[in-house]
Length: 407
Ligand code: HAM
Image (cartoon, rainbow, N blue to C red; front, side):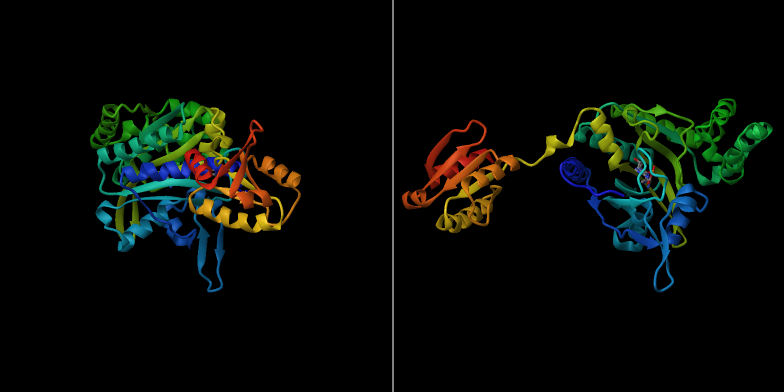
């Protein structure tokens, strides 16, 4: 888990601000759910055999003996919120920005506290709704200035078809099971779908010889996928159909996708999403959404030359005081400038002018306003341009004019 400070924080601020602008255009509204929730919320919605639930949650028992976990993702809490009736469930459209926690082995692209920007749109399965959310995601990537990402898309059908798909896969894999490594054999028993995205070469080779999930699905589910792809084509969005794409969480139905970027190395998924059905309070809840990993997004931006210092705040104005009387008057000047929207700073005790100029230089300020007894007497302000070293003496209206023009 890391601290986040300048200059890195500037790119985070840009990402969050532009995300809010894009979400507002698509009429999604922000919801902030707690980072700590009942453990059962996650086991029920994400699936109790998933890696996230079995190996990665930070779980604890509080003083009242309640079992709680730091949220490993945002969908479960968002759905709990929507289904609690706080929103009109039928068409809730919400987004979230915040930290998530997974106790994974830290490595490039995997952090124990990481951040997601995600959204959830409630509503019954509808390929157009899935396409709209994917289009929003592409819009976000454009707003952040990221180039070179790709969308991998697949379908995993409906829960009622799942048994047939799993049977079909098991039947095709069983004759070759003994060729597979032990953990893959275990997966075969517990979660055969997750075998499909294994990186193990023996598993990969076997997968090439067996039917894809899509081939094992019903005609209706294949038609659903076709409509998503056609709709996206109509929106001029390219996707790669990737039959090996399965997601690490159990709640998905129909469309699933990932956005990947080749600048990222092994953990190349910037974002994951899909349509889901979650049982909450005994009732099924349908929705579609995605979550982008902010750290990975920034790594991808940096790999393509977009760096944090580009988003640093504008240079401010420094105010230097010669003597106690000027120090007092400058406090009022500083307050006035700040109230008029001009960022400025000054030394709050009498110091030598040289020390004050040194500090202005260190702060990267482009202008220094200097006042001493004679300027106070004349009602003027000396303005030094730190870039070219020139100085001019101005009266208040001219000074304000100059500073406000630069804002
Ligand atoms: P996910 O694929 O588990 O999906 O996570 C989404 C994204 O979060 C990943 O693509 C990755 O960028 C980032 N991420 C995940 N784990 C880490 C980590 N340990 N360190 C850094 N980044 C990480 C979900 O969480 C679903 N809730 C997405 C969703 C929303 N599906 C429907 N609605």
